[in-house]
Figure 1 (cartoon, helix red, strand yellow):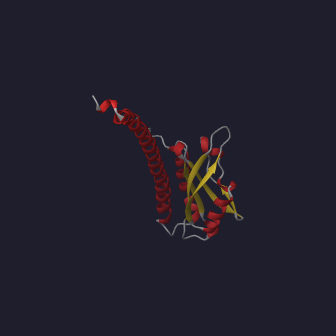
Figure 2 (cartoon, rainbow, N blue to C red):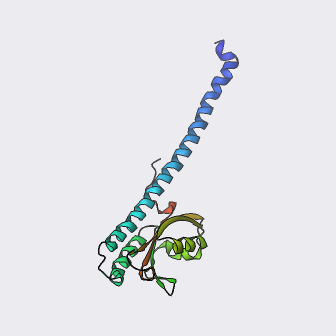
Figure 3 (cartoon, rainbow, N blue to C red):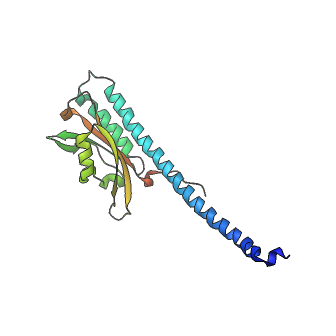
Amino acid sequence: MKILSGKLSKFLVLMPVIFLILNACYFMYASKEIQNALLREKYDEAVGLVEMLSSAVEANTERIWLDHEQNIRDSVEFMDRLYQVYAGAYKLVDDEPVLITERFYETSIFEPFDFIEFTDAVMTQDSGSLIIGYTPKEHIYRELHLYFKYMPLYSPPNERYLVIAGVSKYSVTSAIPL
């Protein structure tokens, strides 16, 4: 009983409070890390879909580039129908990108060529990735993780298609169990 009435007792009373605070901080951090891991997984899935399409297009180098258009269009429109996933296919006409796919769902208001950093990246690289922050009308700010690739690479630059896929944290549909 003497121990509980001294200075040590004040410290022992605070131990559960300190433990609860540290526990709450840990689980907040863990929750964010799980969300980031799910976002990375979703991004890797989008990149995988673009790479799979690219492999299919590149498989037959004897085929003329125009023969790939319907396959590219159908595949990209499939990706764009996924929840909160941006996907678009463009063809360069007079050095200007022209959207050749129909847009679906919430990401249809996003236009990557409105962002100078995206335009610079696309004009200097055959493929790449970047993160663009934007705020859609009547929504909150988000960061869109984009991946782009020209295909088929065996064609001259004016005969290629540009395929773009992007995801944000709102694309993740898996819930973290409480």
